[in-house]
Length: 281
Ligand code: NAP
Image (cartoon, rainbow, N blue to C red; front, top):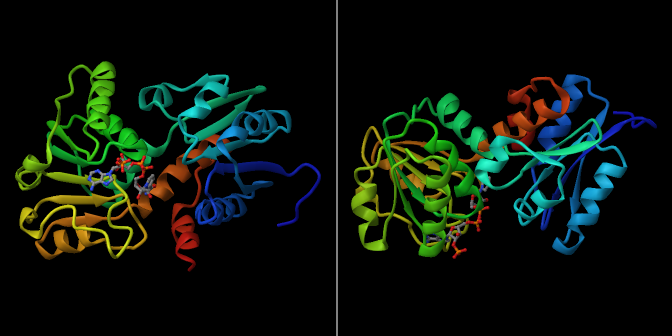
């Protein structure tokens, strides 16, 4: 594209961000939609976050994405938050509107869209097992708690984090049935869960241990791993071997990006082209 004097800017703020796939899919979507805007990536240290946000506002950016480690910290530098961002307690998307910066979150909805549209899995009345209670888990668990699930069990290496996530969800969704489980209960719970979601980084490296043994998986179960590199973690390989349906995190990445795109431009992006751009096709 030709960059002109009035070409608008959208960016990703994170640290580190070198390996981000977002510019590939967002710039492709902008090009297809005929938007006169570019998506750039900035490696921003935590101590420079406030100034970066002020810069985005001062220079009239269209919006931004925010990633690790800024998703929570950024909230205090924004003018307004959407209900979704407030509920999740984190921001992954900033939209500039009428001179204000509005913090939103598309991670949870991106997950649900991927689960339902790509995976064909309806979480209503289902027993969910969440692995991990970090940043991504928070977005997924909050969103799932509003999708009419039957119950949710959370296992996290750091039990305090899981307790905090449970309290957070109970505070905004009193009806939700959420329990924190210990390592001893993990395999039993996994073997009766309809949906297992891995929100830990375990599985990214070849040397990582197995989160669950193969024996817990069964036909009719759905296993979602937020990791997309490698494409099929050991968790997904074992689940698939036992006949469970599986999905990696690539679709969540694309759908959260597509939702952010729509908020910045008011247009629905070409998600197929976004998938292709990420895969380098
Ligand atoms: P995070 O905030 O660091 O959370 C990960 C959590 O998992 C931490 O609380 C960690 O505990 C815990 N954990 C580590 N090993 C564990 C184990 N064996 N059992 C149980 N819990 C364990 O990271 P995040 O941002 O949530 O990201 C998690 C994963 O999701 C990463 O692989 C990331 O790439 C992926 N992700 C994908 C998407 C997508 O769009 N597909 C979006 C966001 C994130 P400690 O801190 O105590 O180690």
